[in-house]
Amino acid sequence: MSKYQPPLTVTPTMLALVADISEQVGVLTANREAALTPQLRRGNRIRTIQASLAIENNTLSVEQVTAVLDGKRVLGLPREIQEVRNAFCTYEAMGNWRPERQADLLAAHKSLMAGLIDNAGHFREGGVGIYREQRLLHMAPPASRLQPLMHDLLAWLGASDWHPLISSCVFHYEFEFIHPFADGNGRMGRLWQTLILSRWRPVLAYLPV
Image (cartoon, rainbow, N blue to C red; front, top):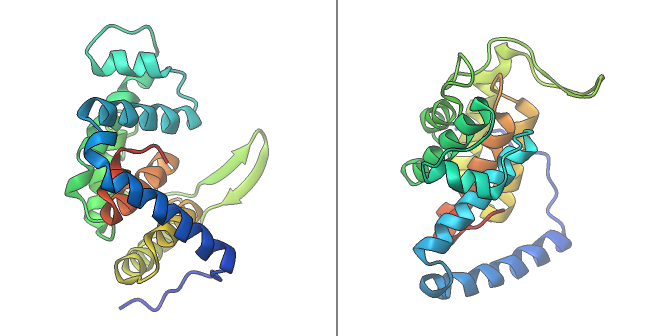
């Protein structure tokens, strides 16, 4: 059992937000059939995918993403179209994965980044930094530390009794700090937070967060 504990202090403001969000999600859950028809679920998933990819500089609009998934011809970069197809397939498979399983995390990355990078589904083997223009914002831990860091984080996630609204945010933050993959860390972090939240309330699998 990992003894890792994230350096977090839960505040009254956080607890109040958890209560407020839980109440709103409860209303959505009670009205799930009426609020989330199959058409609306698909539309929400498309918006989730488009927003997540836009953060990574994918220029396709919601309408273009919808057209790609409908099998229509779209004027766009081949890489951007591949990113959309990968993301949709990966989100559709989300229900098969457990958030605390490393094998599932790697399988999701392989699906999300297939045809986009050479080592999809594997932790990076070199160093990586996050830059804004020419300025280094964050130097991720060395590759030699990835296995123990990810083991501890996933073990903590599996054993955590914190509310999922908190534990999903903690995981997302720590995951991005570790930056375990050569590419795709941002979209993986967003996917995995959605997965964690959907295990708490299934309706959150189809709501853009």
